Length: 84
Image 1 (spheres, rainbow, N blue to C red):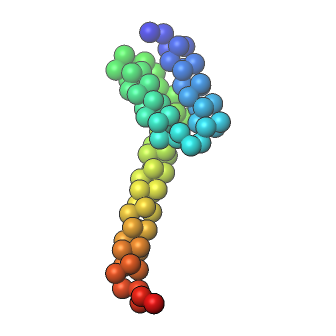
Image 2: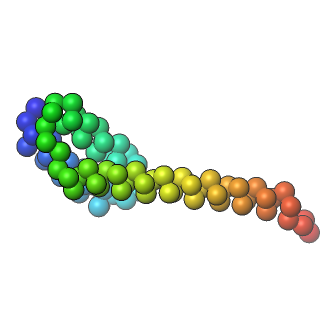
Image 3: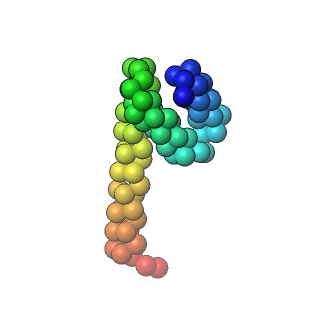
């Protein structure tokens, strides 16, 4: 496995991320997998991709927190709102 091959794979995944925003989570998982493969083989990891991975992880965590908060709000509204 050559670093150039993995770098090309990452480039394709990043292009897909731009062009297919509906599949972000799936693509993100593939990016993480590819970066982990590079780490396992002791290959150098580009700093910008490491930061990108951390930023995406934070983004998805924020989305989950927003979804959890929305579910709590909806629950209270459903249980306490006056019914007509």
